[in-house]
Length: 198
Image (cartoon, rainbow, N blue to C red; front, side):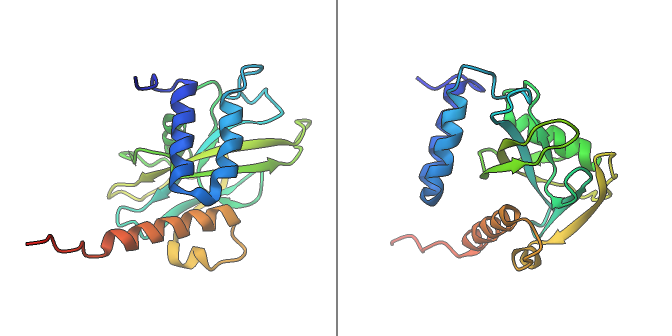
């Protein structure tokens, strides 16, 4: 019997699938599984200061060669769009909503499945203690219209070439990892398939 969509068991199954696809990240996935199974305090709300789920998007141009980054106002870093779940257990929906709100782009297309996981420490800010974000990341593609709108959460937005991003040591390491993953996938998809036996 399949897990109910957006249930803790469905999320755990998605994390298990991710660990199977990326065995080198199984230890990270195990941390996400542990958080999803913790019933002591809701991990989908930001009030859980031991750590909580967030969701974000590798937002790609239609041709898959560039990604749209936001210069985050609070953190002062170029990052992918994303944000808190705030009680929403559908993290793919959270990633899509945040991408729309932070970029002003419409007609975005969400690809199914978790693309990347990242657990990172958020520093203390305006009285909120330092805490862990368990960020669940998805691929989202833009349509033909790439005219973005800068939201109040950002200093700026910019389209960046993925090949260039991978080699830029000033960029967040997990963002470079996502760019590498996407380029590996694109290269694999571009290879001609083996001829069928006759």
